[in-house]
Image 1 (cartoon, helix red, strand yellow):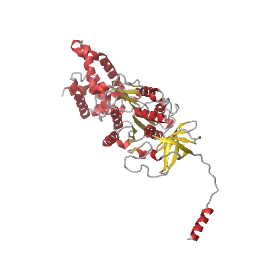
Image 2: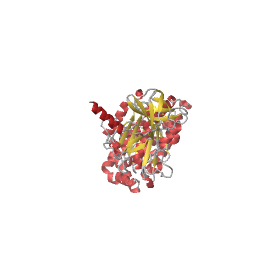
Image 3: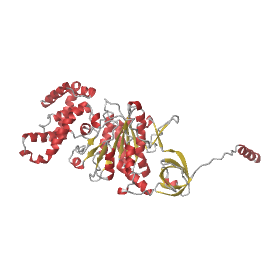
Image 4: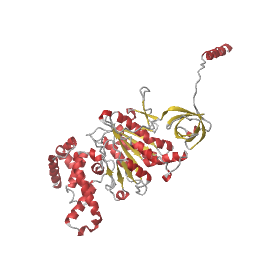
Length: 508
């Protein structure tokens, strides 16, 4: 026994290294609400990862607020394990998320960990790729103008507020007006748009109820959309720090696929809660509050996120990242602080009006207040041809809508415009999770703008439109739908076929 102890001591003495290692460490001064104040990390960088040495093991965090004498850090792990006096080490790297095609079809948290109960995402440990969640947006030189449409399958949007690949289009409206529905419809439609390659879709849920996230995942699965979708879940039950990180993680994943030369679509649902989380963190870190208690850099918070959406030029791979941020307004106030900030950053907005929603107009898109600043450049020639007349007819109808109640006393031409506007409003109505291929949209809008539904009462127009499309699908597919989808144009021969189809449909 004695000899074995002596032998062990000899081995330890022989293996003793006299190397001296200098390491700069800090110490926790105070901790609470997921925030730690640290002294001694004078050389730590902003957004640099740090590690807390606790009794329960190592806990990671991010250096968030760099003060003169101390560092404010966000705790990413178990905050209850961190105590006053714990040692803190800088890790010399920024927070990154592991990316790869293996993420497709999975539900992850903002740190990239799986939360869908399906086991590890990445099987091998070699050749892994990490993307920092915070990256500088692509420069002007690497970009090219938006030129390819991203069809949502929603008639009112694809016709009048079109979205292009690489665009940033805001979806804004009050609570329960169908904002998330539009985003989910857009994701579902990507797998059905045969003319264009299917983008990788990333749905980022920020501060949503877990039941809502579960429902969305189930919906995507039922429409086979999860085969090209990644869900980043930051539910209401997790700390605000992870709410703050979630959209940046989603953007990093999207950038990976954009860097591969592919198209990606990321939905941020929603950035109002993201701003709330940032305000909470900032106030806990005792940053000076500004308007509505938001810190002074709240604008930079969303601009650096949304500017990462881009259409890259062919020299840089030709990939794209399209962003659909969602903002929730209070009582329709689009001039509030956060909405105006995000409106100024994006390339247009889809405004959902509560009054229209309650009137039964679904989706409740206010065409007058909605705009797409670059999408028309990416719109197909066929859709552009029918959409121009649609916009004009609806604009005229909006001007005359106040006189609808006096329709019996109006002249014939005014009555015709009102009837046409009513018919087009009914045609643009669409149920949830029923996206429509763009060639069918073109056929239906053409029939509507050419007055083929004007004679019907408004209550019958919706069903008549559906029957008309079924009629065209069965008898005129090769003459109308296939040529529109193949060429994306509306040539005179197809218009003649549409006219004949509309006449034959009336005679049924």
